[in-house]
Image 1: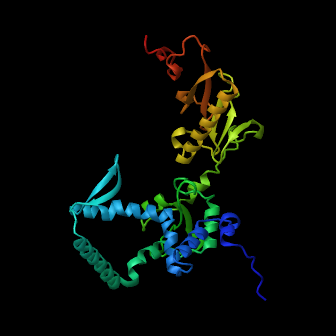
Image 2: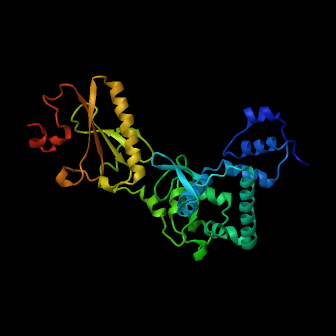
Image 3: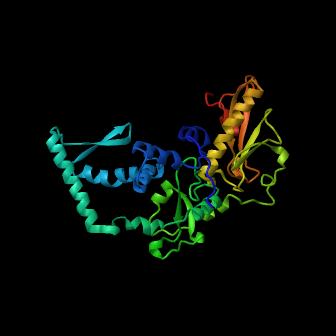
Amino acid sequence: MVPEVPKHTLEDFIAEKMSMSHIYQPAMLKVLLENGGEASVEEIAKSFLLHDISQVEYYSMRTNNMVGKVLRDHGIVRPVKKGRRISGYQLVESVNSENQRNSLIQLCEEKLSRYAEKRGKALWEHRSISEGLISGSVRYEVLKRAKYRCELCGAHESQTAMHVDHIIPRANGGSDDITNLQCLCFKCNTNKRNNDDTDFRSVHKSYAERDKNCPFCNLKPSRIIDENELCVAIRDGYPVTTNHTLIMPRRHVPDYFDLYQPELNAIHSLLHSQKNRIMETDPAVTGFNVGINSGASAGQTIFHVHVHLIPRKVGDVENPRGGVRGVIPSKQNYAE
């Protein structure tokens, strides 16, 4: 016996009942509505592509780096720019006649048809070889394992589209087993060559690195005043001023210059949130010193990167001119 399916009006379902984990439901309903209530699977699939940012990004790069460049080199098109960024293209030759325009469009369609007929299934074979058909459940496990972050640059799914990539490409004999899959963002995956078998999962694993002898790797939870996925903030144990704050990565990394870009982003985020919180707590704060000691000769004593956020007030020292230049006292006042 087929279970009874709850009935909703279309408007009520779209407005109130629809639970979304992706764009697919409203995109499918939209194309059905636009086609009088019925559409082919192919028409529905094409509608998904219109909303797939990863496909737009992929073909935008192909437009600028491949076909756009070829047509520019032949003097057929010229780029349209917004500042330094190419935002579009225009034909060099004017086509004013409707008949001429239609004739040229027909020529293009004939070229497309002939090429597709000549190549057949091989036309898009390069994509199936490099990416393979990965089931939704396997893709989910790969993304979950990577915490929805690119295993090369650390970008999160909320920032860019994520791809499930073969470590050893299928063209080189790589399997579709989950152990041969990794999560890369659109840009990193596009820039990765098809014969590149670099395993970036070690980058993701390194975020969990800790040193049992490092005081900043073993902080008491009570000391943490702010945090995000990659960094924490604490008050300095020997403050220069009230609310002197240290912001550091969770990963044990000695030198600021060895931080990953996502960690730099996370530190920057906590600097802003702590700066705002301190100023809300103490309106007398009118400035900050932000500093990092990198290396023993620069004064670093704990070799786990930490950024100092030091609140400053008018009159807290007789002459603050020069600020961080004061690390070498004789050079602080450069006006002398």
